Length: 485
Image 1: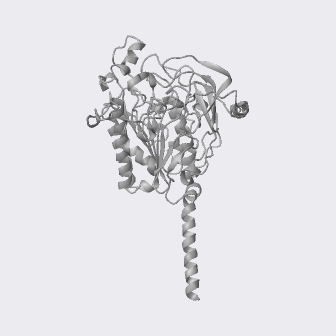
Image 2: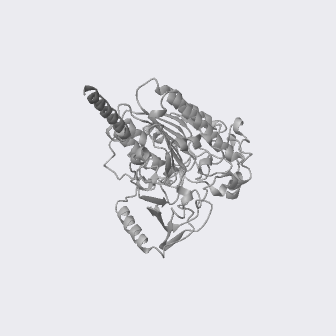
C-alpha cells in the first residue's frame, strides 16, 4: 500500500513538473524571471521581402537565416512603421508611429548630413526603456536619427555605439552633373564605386574615428563589435540589448574580398550572403558563451527594396512595388524570431510590426509600458511562446504625413497610392481600393465593389484611429545651409 502511495505521489509530482514546463515561458514573460532574456535586433537596410532563400530567392543563398527560420519562427506578415529609413527606425525604437513624433515629412524623406534635428529627447527609446530593468545597451551600425552629438545613440539610452550616423550613399564626393548621374551610379557604375566616393564618417561613442568609412569591411566590423558585447556580457550578471543595424544592402554596395563574386546574384547577392555569414558568427558567439537559450534574436529590414536602382537593388518577391511605397513591397519585410527552447518553431501568418518589439521586450523585461503617450505596439509573446492567435489585427501605412492605406485582418484598403521612389503620380481613391492580401498578396484584384461591408468596417476603424492621432511638427525639413562636419 505504501509502495502504491509513493508511486502515486511520485507520478503526481512528475506531472506537475511537466505541466509547469508547458506554461513556464508565459510565466517567465509576464511575471518576471530570475534571469531576464537578452535581446538582439538585427536590422538590415533596403533588403526586400524576396531576398532570402528561405523567403523564396532562387539564387541568393542564406543558410544561417534559413536555419534560424527553421529553428525559430518565420513571420510572413510582419511590417515596419514606414517605407523609408529614418521614420522606420524611429518606429522600431519608440514603439510609436513616426508621425506621432515628427519623424515623417511631406517635404523630406530622411535626415541628411545638413539636417539640424534628430529624434526628440522626450521620446523613450527601447534602449532607455530597457535600462529601467538594468539592461546594458549597445548599438552597432546605421543610426539615421540625427547626426549631431545631442542626437547620437549614446544620448538616447545606448551605453555604446559604433557605426555611421546616416545612409552610406550620403556625402557623395564624385562630381555629379544631374540627377540622372545619381541614378547611373547604381545602374551603370555600381561595380566601380569605392568607399572614397562617399565621405561617410564612422563614429565610436560620439567621436569620429574614420572618414570615409571603409565600407568593404564594415559588415565584419559591425559584427566584431557586436560579438565583443556578447563576450563581455559573460563578465557581468546584467542582461543586454544589442541593436545591430547593417547599413547594407542599401546602395552603394560593398563586399569584402572573401565574398566578392561568390553569389550567382552578383554584387547584391555577395553583400546579402556576407551579412548572412556574419549573423552566423554572432549566433555562434551566443552559443559559445552559453547565451543562446536565454536570448531572443529578431531579424528584419527597415523597408523594402529600392527598385529604381535596378541591378543594385533587391526584390520584394511576389509583393507589389518597393521602398517608398505603401504597397506591400514597401513595408512588409522578411522577419525571423529565434530563441532555442523558448520560441515555438513554425511559420507565422499572424500580423506583427517592428513597433511591437518595444511592447514585447518591455513586458518580458518587467518594465511598465509608458502611459503618458499613445503607444502603437502590442505584446507578441502569445504567438512567440505558444503560437496562439496574435493580438494585432490592424496595420497603418503612412507615407509623408498622410494615411495612405490601412489593413484590417486579411483586407487592405488604399485611400491614396503613389509608386515607390523613382517617379509616379499621387492618386486619391474614392471609394478606396480594396484587396484581400491573404488571398492576393500581390494586390492585383480590387474587390471594393464586392465587399462594401468590409470598406465600412475599415472606415469605422480608421475613424477610431484618427481620433487618437496627434502629429508632432515636421523635424526632417529644417536644414543648415551647408554640411556639418
